[in-house]
Length: 509
Image 1: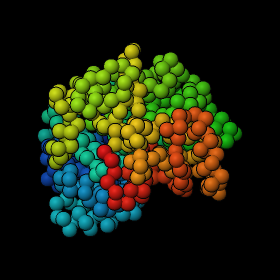
Image 2: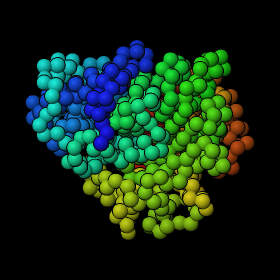
Image 3: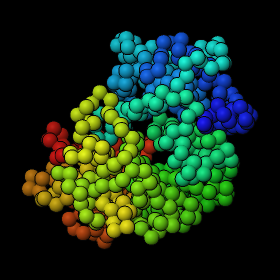
């Protein structure tokens, strides 16, 4: 068995959580006491096994206190993205069936959300201050009917309305190990000596799952309230971080720092850098390996837990651009009709053997995620191919593919070229209407310096693309945006960009 409770008994004074910017610390002993109190409070609010608690909370210690309270009370835990509007958050609260909503007053829209939820009448609302005050009055012993709960996360909604990913609860003792615990222990050797930096929002699946699994393994989790490239480097140096997980946009922002800022920190404690969530351009990753050394490990997986791949730096240098071999489940690459494709030919990525997830209250989306002939194979909507050695290469999201004159064009390939231009801070490549070709390629660029946006930069970027891409892939036009709608998790909210250009026209599927 493994659980923060075990470590609280063995090492109560060890830091479980440190807030990077302030140094605020919560020990394992303190976290365990507050989690037990929180479980009593959840029962007082009549939440029982299988019910859902929704959290709209920024990166702070209470996120984990509530998580572990709900986990031992047998509940589904639904964290929500802090950048949502009140209406977007209301949809998740209602769709999840949450009986309790805990909101952080640091989120500007929390009062508006509470008004909407109270009008609906299906959930009790507590501010974080109200939760803390009530929790402090609760007994610190265990509740009588403990069982293991789990998170029920919602997709980021980059291609449509967010979908709740629901997995069956086991009904086991809350201290029973789970698949995530086993994989992180075996893959990364995390233990009580690990000091893990979490620089991303905790509401996202990977930061939450990795941080809480670190607690199962007895590690210290250092949490950044908000990522900034210099702050991350300072945190690694200050707290002697041994492991961290980042996304490619964080790599890009760190690499584009002036050398005196980028190279002015002691990173010698760092033993492992994990990355995922979005494709990483080859040249960006090569530069990161040159800088940090061969300590970078990449995986490909989704919130659905239907399978995963992994690749070390040494393997990646032999297979640049790959996200690795299957580490959980069996990979299948299939065409639209479900036929398996040979190595080197791109198709829909399916995994066989992962968790039996379903999309909450959406049986049609659940059905669409399954293979037409093999219902135990599932997909996330990504396109890719495997080579002769079984290494997976991602091509793009199926929904983002551009079809121009019958030719399939994958925006990710073009974005990976443009992001390496020194005058580009961020980029999104989309298909826009073309009367003759159906779609044409457009690049929407966030310049490194906004004052450089204009026709001259567009021509420079066109010429750069012609050097590195075939003519059919080169953008026909360039637009500029001071800030692309990219989530804190690193995912690009591309649907919002595409909607600007289609203006009621049906977007090709």
